[in-house]
Image (cartoon, rainbow, N blue to C red; front, top):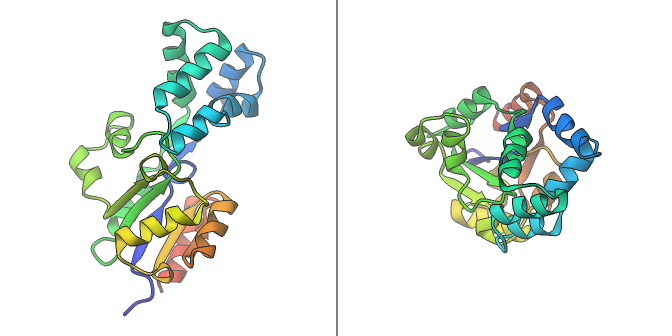
Length: 207
C-alpha cells in the first residue's frame, strides 16, 4: 500500500493567485491605501475572520468595506469586481490535481468566507459545474467547518471525512503557518511557491 492516499490543495494562493496586482493596487490608491492596506481592509478585519469561521456571511465583509470607505451600494459592487479582477485560476494545476484520481483521493481545504466554495469555479472562472464537482472527494471550507487553518481541528475534520490517518494525506498550501499546522496534525505537506516547484515536490512524495 502506498503511503499517501490523498492529495489536498489550498485554493487562494495555490489554485487561485493574484497575478495582476496593478488593479488592486490602483483600487487602494483611490482611497489612500497601498496594496497591503487594501488587502488588510478586506481580509484582515474581525468580520472577515468571523466569515472564515462561519460566524458571518461574505456580504457582511463587503458591508464593512462599504461603510469604512463610505461607498454607495453601486460603488461597493464596482469595488468588489475590481478587487477580484487580477485573480487567475491556474487551470493547468486544477486539471493536474483532478488527474490524480482515481489512484488517490483529492480534495480542497481552504480558509474561505463561503461555506460552499465550488460554485466560484464555475461562476467566476467558467469551469463546467459537473467537471468541478466530480474533481474532488472532499471539499472543506473553514466557514462550513467553523474553524480555520492552521487549527488542528480543521485537519482532523478533513482527515475524518477522508477516513484516512494524517500520514496518508499530503497538503499543498502557500502559507508556512498552514504547512506547519498540517505537519503538527501528522500530515505530509508541500509549501507552494510556484506550480513547477510544488508539483515536483509532490511527485517526489508520491514516488
